[in-house]
Image (tube, rainbow, N blue to C red):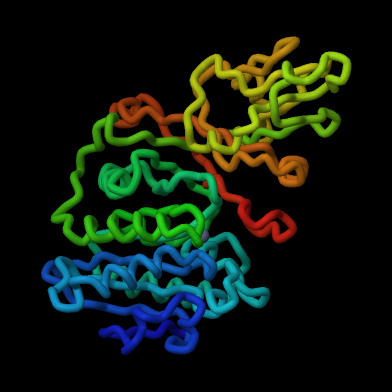
Length: 374
Ligand SMILES: [Zn+2]
């Protein structure tokens, strides 16, 4: 299995939506386009077939003034899972998840691993300026950039997209980590595919990235960047009931035991809860109506929350991701992931070190869950 490598845009390609690309392309395709500065910007789209904001951003960018003007920098477009895009799926049953098969992957070897290893070698030889891999995720999450290395140039590239940047080392075998071995590399998460603001944001960012002359080797100042890493998963005790709404608004006699969360809880994603934030009102006598667990399963609830007779409050600043109001998802998966802020100044001085393992907060491969959470 080999990728197709082109030095031009096939006629009509920019008019072709992601689900029609299979008519023009036979599979993974690299398109090299020349620009004024020769070290190329690599832009990867459709690693997941149903995440279309990146391809829409590229189409719109190149159909604009670059139809007549030269590109400010050479561009390599990497189009990933054309076959799954035709079916509006992340990947198809006979395929692995493409963004788990890049060098560094821990999945069993497949022909796709070899293909992506070949692509990595090819891209490395092109000595890219930087690499941007564009994805979509859940609805109510704001757009954010993610990096696999706490590296000044990568953080600059990321902070051009969003002030909030997530550092992650899991899952393994992702494109941004493979290309991050030889050039500044980021993953963008652009919200829901169907929401045009994702491709708007990605397009404006790509335009800026094409015009960058260099990426500073100094860490960005703290006011330009909030760097987070995920450190725990928050679940509700299986015996504890939960509700969304105000406990006090219920008539006293009908009040049931359980946790009462704010009814707009899912709008809190990627918003930092300060110390003392009331996450829930509580009626009941369980010592641990909810549980925060770290990467290796350790109980970190008491480090994160104060649980008293009537409320659950945060003990320290925490930022939730992937919060949902869907009871099925909460029972079967989790209420949310908890992220903590990494102090850039401490990273610069070397007084703290990044966590060894920290996953990207995303929910995948659970087709039984409602769509917006996948
Ligand atoms: Zn994705």
